[in-house]
Image (cartoon, rainbow, N blue to C red; front, side, top):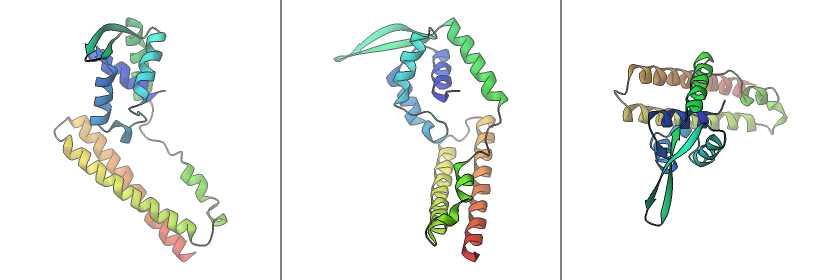
Length: 175
């Protein structure tokens, strides 16, 4: 399933919007950190949704020299959105699949100490993500109990990953 497709159809279900507005919402919400949605993918998604009959041009607005197309969701787009929602909400929120786990199997093929250094770099990156998560939570404080539950879950996953990396670091140091 495409996260961008779900996002764009969801936003269009709230009312007509142009691509720039959707991109601004993606950027302002830092959605690329929480989902697979990238700001640059919005315009492509809008064109594809329109070609599939899931969205349509609702209006065109002129701003300076620029002509902006305002899109609206179609009835078929609403049915598709409902199917995407059902699929997304029926799936587990996180997966245990990871290239990290696969790469760990052959860590000994790397130069001496390199795997340890890479795990340490991963731990630093994880610490940075936890900082971003905390800032995001603060910025979205009071949003809803559902948002709080998602932030709690994300922090629990990051804390578990931090513990895993600490354990791996200890095992690599000993090995």
